[in-house]
Amino acid sequence: MKIKKFFHITTALFFLLALSINSSVAYADATYYPSSWSSQKIAISTTADIISEGFDAQPFTKSITRKDFCELLINTCHTFGTTLPAPPMSHPFTDTTDINAENAYALGLTQGTATGIFSPDLPLTREMAAVMLSKLLMLFQSTSDNGSLAYTQPMDKQQAAKTLSEYSTDSNLLSDWAKTSMADVYTHGILLGTGEGRLDPKSYITREQAVILSLNVLTYCDESQIRAAGVKECVLPMPTGIFISQSYNIGDVYLRWNDIPLASAYDITVFKNGKPAYTKRIDSNYFDLRARSTTNNSVSRSYVSTDYTNSPLYNSIFGNDKQTIHAALKVVPVNSNGDPSVFSLTREFTIEPWVNKNEMRFVDPAKTILTNINETNLNMTSVKVNVWNLTSLGTKTTSSITLTVNKNVAENVTKIFADIYNGQEKFPIKSCSAYANRGGKSEHNSGTAIDINPEENYFVEWGGAIKAGTLWKPGENQYSIPPDGDVVRAFNRYGWHWSPDMHWSNGADYMHFSLGGT
Image (cartoon, rainbow, N blue to C red; front, side):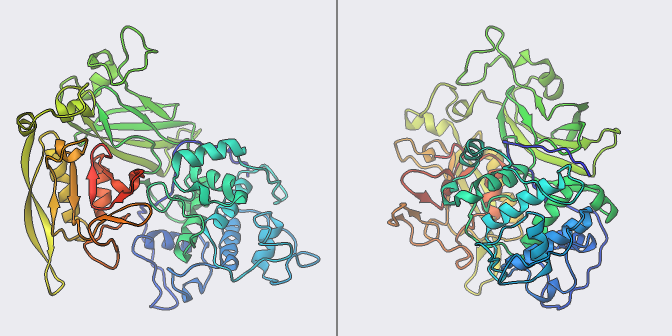
C-alpha cells in the first residue's frame, strides 16, 4: 500500500483518541486493567488485534520489554497488511529465537542492542521506542511491495537538531543514534514528551503506553483500519494536533495545524463564544486572520497595529469591538473523494481585547511596569473562588478564598479556579496569593501572578538550594502540584505559565503561575 509521506517540523500530531465505540474487552486477570486514561485506546487496540491474548496477564503500568514491544509492532504490521518475511535461515541473535524479534529484525525495525544481541528482557526506553516507531512509520509509508524496508534517515541531522531544540528542553539527553528518529516521531505526534518540552529519552515505556504508540502509527497511516474496528470519531485534543496559541490579541490570529496523511483539503469551523461563526473547506493547513499594516506589511512590529479593522475576514467572524472572545477551531481532514475523515482536531483559544499583554497589564501597550501604588490599585479587583480543603481525616471539603488580581484577568482567573475545583483530582489548596507590591519586575506587582501552596511547592535553585518553601513531592504530598495535573492544565488553558516549564536561569518556583511566564 502506498501512503504519502509527510515530514513535519511543526508541533506534534498525537492520536489521543476519544472513541465513540461500544467495546467489551475481557481481561485475563481482573487485577490487570489499564489506567482510566488509556482504557478506550486499549479497547480499540484489542479489537484491531494489536494486543495478543494474554497481554493483560501483566500489569499495564509495568515497563514493557523489548521482546513484548516487538510483538506489538508485528501485530500492528499484520493489521496494516504488511507481508512478513520468510523465516530466517539462521537466527540473527544469540540471546533469543523469538519470532517477533526476528521478524522485526528482518523488517529493519531493530538491529538489537549490539552485534548479535537483542536483549529481549531489557525494559524499553523512550528513545529505543522512538527508533522502532520511526522505522515502522517509514515501513507503512514505503512503496515497497516485498515487505522489506529500505531504511534511510527520516530527516537530516541539522533538521532534527533544530526541531528537537525548538520543541524540547532535554534533547541533550538523547543518544546520538536516536536523535533523528525522536525528531521524526515527535513531529508526527506518534511519541510526545512527558510534560512541557521534556522528552525523558532514558525513561521506560509502560505496557499501556506501548500499545497506544503502536495504535498511533496504525491510525496515522491508515484510518480505514480503525473504521473497520468500529471507531466513529477520533478527536485530537489540545495542545496536540493544532499548532495555535491558547491566547491571541485582537486582530492577530493565525491558526495552523499539522498536515494529515491522505488529506486533500480541510473542513474548518471557527466558533465564537460557543457558536459556529465561520465554516469553509480550504486546501492549506493554516488559517490566517492577522491584521495587516496599511503602510508596510513587511515591517516587524513589537505589537500589532491597533487598526485591526483592516482585516475584513477577522471582522466578519469576530467583529471589531474590543472585547474578550472565547473561540475554538475545529478541523476535519477531507480525502481525495471529498469524504470527511473520522479524525477531527479541536482547539479552544481566547482573543484578548488588547494590543498586547502590556496594554492588558498596564493600559499602555508600550509600558512595562506600574509606576506607583495608586496606579496599581486602579488596575486591581477581587475575585472569590471555590477551592478544596483537606481535613485532618484526609477528606476534602469545599471552601472559598478571595484573591486580588489584575481586573483584566479576573474573568479567566475565576475560570481557572473553577476548572481546578471541578477537576477529577479535587486538588486541595490551603494557601494562595496573587497581587503583592514586591517591587522589581515581579508579575505579582501587576496582579498577573499567583502562588499556590508555597510550603509544599518550593522555589529551588538548579544547584538544589531551596530559596522558598520546604518541599515538592507530587504524588506523595497532596498539596504538591503535579506537572501533568489539573492545576497546571487549568492555568495553561487560559494562557498562563508554570514556572518550572519556563526554565528560569535561577531555578524553578513550583508554586508560581504567571501570565507572562515571569
